[in-house]
Length: 278
Ligand code: MN
Image 1 (cartoon, rainbow, N blue to C red):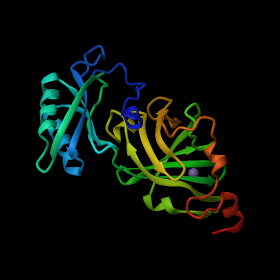
Image 2 (tube, rainbow, N blue to C red):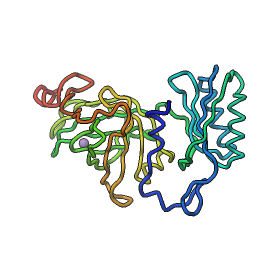
Image 3 (tube, helix red, strand yellow):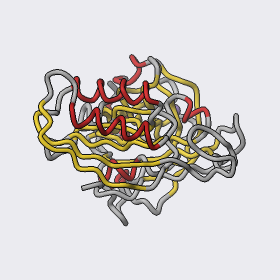
């Protein structure tokens, strides 16, 4: 079943269409072969995914590998046909320690991946801090390369995929700041949500962020599932949009900010924190 996580990697990338790279022809039309494979047996374990990624990189095959919920290992592979076939042969044999029972392969559309990634693994922490300052906003922070990349979202995140929320790219924050909650000189901060996230998309991070389009999956206490951050201005612009992806965790019509206002650290609302102090 190709559901949430398959869609997260299938996102069309705006601002990306005219370029020629990787396994695309000069017209931007992908060439070669793409397959989805499902590998059954005693295959789930870090060794299988890492070995698959290494073999794919040796072969120049792009895509991803992940452990699926049903105990199989799922693979998307695309590239020159002989290289993809070599990778399928590798999957049928499996790395040392794995016992492959069955591999099913279906041809799919070439998606234009620029990396071979291990999916379904945490890329780091995320936090959303509600912040009363000169303006009231929510700071979405994603851990990337040892710092928290940050966007100020005036109206806060939404689980409704039809809602596009303005997100202003702001300065990186230290990871240590993630747990900060309490009054500040000019207002205060509440930890509105926190958890881990997975990176998605066809472009490796942090380059995806540099190019202004990043897809990711949040595993928070309130926020769950795929999201996209899309820069709307030219390179260097601070204006982005935060949008919930259409997946099984989407909640059309909902307003998670008003429905679940309390801090995930203390259970207090930001108003209570401002009144009571730390
Ligand atoms: Mn802020």
